[in-house]
Amino acid sequence: MGGGAAAERLAEARELLAEHPVVDGHNDLPWALRAQSGYDLDALDIAHDCSATLHTDLGRLRAGGVGAQFWSVFVPGRMAGEDAVSATLEQIDVVDRLIERYPDALAPARTADDMEAARKEGRIASLKGAEGGHSINNSLATLRALHTLGVRYMTLTHNENNDWADSATDAPRHGGLTGFGREVVREMNRVGMMVDLSHVAPTTMRDAFDTSGAPVIFSHSSSRAVCDHPRNIPDDVLERLPGNGGVAMVTFVPKFILPAAVEWTARADENMRAHGLHPLTTTPEAMEVHRAFEAANPRPVATVATVADHLDRMREIAGVDHIGIGGDFDGTAFTPDGLDDVSGYPNLIAELLVRGWSKADLAKLTWSNAVRVLRDVEAVAREQQALRGASIATIAPREL
Image 1 (cartoon, rainbow, N blue to C red):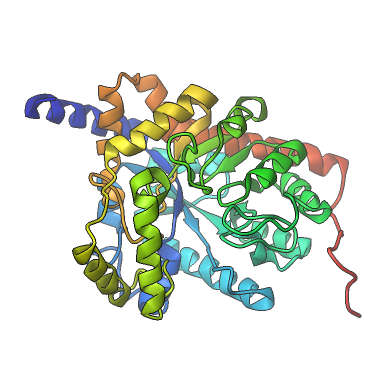
Image 2 (image 1 turned 135 degrees about the vertical axis):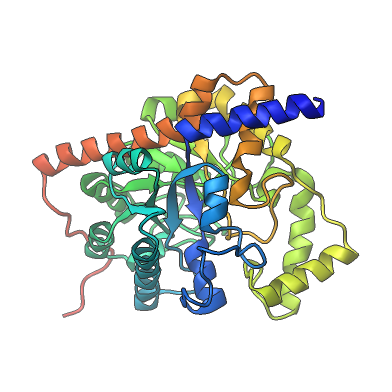
């Protein structure tokens, strides 16, 4: 496509996003703020250009056509018990502080109606998603407390198994969900918290589909048929989304979308560990280690087209009503060319326009599907609450 045609498609993409902005399912800015500034919002002010250290700031969110963001209130699996709960509360707190600090740009949102209201106001609807079931410390009361504080999805695991669910990137322990894990899913349905199946093992995915009476989501996962990484979604699971009503939100992380990047990333991770750093660390010091490794070992580069390949496949299997976008910005050291940060979404929409996606279908991808799923989850919660009260199930006898 020539330069003039490319510019025309990009202009079309921006025009579409002005009306149907992106609902992004996963952004790790809260954890990046913890790691880089100890939650000091003066030291790392996203009202200014933060491109030297972050994928995200307000100017680039605007440029990218983002209309709603699920901010990840993530804590790593190495945090357990009460430490995990406390760290999750700190993550929730910093999201609330961001919303309070930037009221002209960010709107607090807990419901689908809140998302639509923010769009009409020209503000970015700001929601919360907890990444990893270890965050509730095996307590359904803690799950309900997180919902009260605005958490609207919980990823059932992170990279490690927990006491009631298997992760995609750990040795199988439970064969999917335990009995208590199924009760977690049912209680999430009852309170109106979306069940997020990114990071979980395929056995856990299937058990969750069998258990959930509400639509599920994948907040940041891509197609396993296109890139055979355990973090991605098998076709047989994608095939179940229409019957469930859920949505799978494609992620941009190169090691999940580009087969050639999988082996390279494994070596890069080992290099980080050799330097005493966790592979997911993206502080300036960690990025220097990454860049030095990359200079000596050229990195296979994913592109906008790589992500579009995943969306084409996910659309083919699940249907256009069941796909979305979850970039995982500020949760990855590397990003695809053209999707370098949160300003890059118009490049992806332009690529899909070139591939023949209609504007009506793109509006579903960017906005409507995610909003519909949250609305449907809210409806199920109202029905469930009319039928039963809060679950007091436990994973083990309580200490007296």
